[in-house]
Length: 285
Image 1: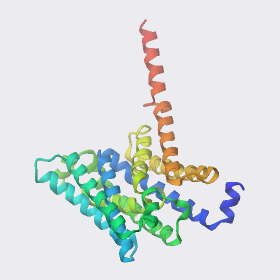
Image 2: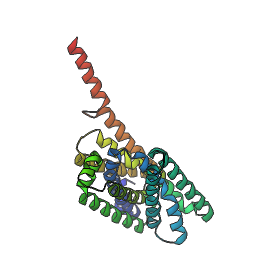
Image 3: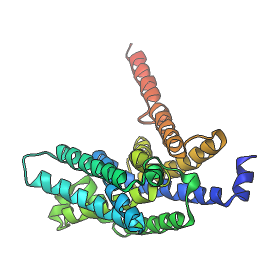
Image 4: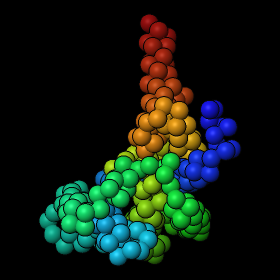
């Protein structure tokens, strides 16, 4: 059966498509700020740190959104506290906190004997997304997009020039933790699609692809959202047709788009830079 025919016929595929598109968009939007601020490691830390909260939420019978957000934000605060109140640098504090949180999550999963239920949280399975998960993703997506739109100028200034932002009286730390909260929410929204293990790829790869194509933040956010949603749709299509893991397929599609951009980008592409270098050498000779 063709993908479009199946899409019209099966409700689970429709939910998967809508969820994938929203995850691709918000991952691209928040990922743009993560890439510009050099917080790729922080994205990895938050994505792994939500696991204990997810496990506890399953145990208490509540939506995993609440537990995941709490542990994600607490981890971000813990990383900041350690790096600001000791000789330990930021990258080391990230390594300490996110590995500790992830290890705690694994232990909780073992104790609660919920590995079967939580398997898809680790690796994602968008084809099995429930209506409640889809609506949760949509709500998170709307909150994230409205927040970025409302505080775009503050996020812009603090991303490019924190010193100038501080001179203007902007609360850099508060904005940082606000961004970490949005990052945690995007991570939660991505759990069913690509899972905890692969969510950092959706945060970084589409944004890095867009970064090779433009120097304007607004254009980067738009392109990153486009690449994220395109990766999600193509990955979903390939995973359905070839019976592959949806999360891994989406990530590999995003990586393929990045590699193509790395090679063929008009300004930053390896191929065009090699051609221009060769032309310069020819003109000089």
